[in-house]
Image 1: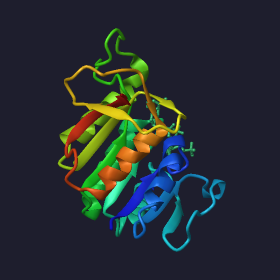
Image 2: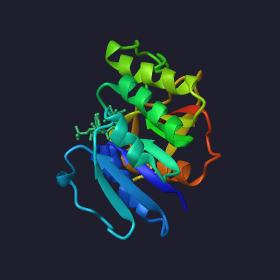
Image 3: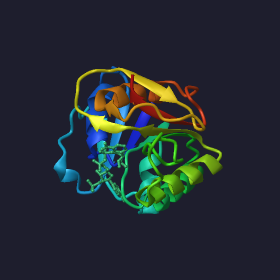
Length: 194
Ligand SMILES: NC(=O)c1ccc[n+]([C@@H]2O[C@H](COP(=O)([O-])OP(=O)(O)OC[C@H]3O[C@@H](n4cnc5c(N)ncnc54)[C@H](OP(=O)(O)O)[C@@H]3O)[C@@H](O)[C@H]2O)c1
């Protein structure tokens, strides 16, 4: 079972995904976040909590030690964060990265123009795609709180389908990616409700 490091563990999608990951009996998790007192450890036997900032390279490298998968669930200066993550993964010998981005970064949503608010998402994806990491970038539609798990994937170069996706669908996909190191390798996937 892999050991997974979640960066930005207090994010909405990360908080939704943590219990999905913990359904895997032997999986171990590290939750990396700023102001760690905001969360309660859901399973102290298997979950480690580290207070840290992704922009703190030393803390990030220390947190990566001993893990198999990095799942980045971030917002803000995504390109600087991506650079730090890539460099820290190189330094610690980690290869597998699941990186949450957004629909629209390639201007792939029919009827919608590219918006400059997506620049940090576009630039971070470009850095990751240029790296030698075993990455999977997810480009979700708008999050929905519905319980349903039902989603379709589109590859880079294809038009995005729909506009929405449930948090549970994304969490389901993130678990599959975390468990299978060969799944959707070096892919940037649009994820939307079927
Ligand atoms: N909501 C949607 O419908 C939607 C649709 C498509 C894509 N997305 C994107 O998907 C991503 C994940 O969504 P989400 O709702 O889970 O986002 P979120 O709730 O805003 O979570 C992002 C997390 O990133 C953390 N973070 C930012 N900078 C950090 C740093 N330097 N070090 C450590 N942690 C840092 C934040 O920590 P703090 O809590 O400490 O600030 C926050 O917990 C976001 O980039 C979002 O824009 C969202």
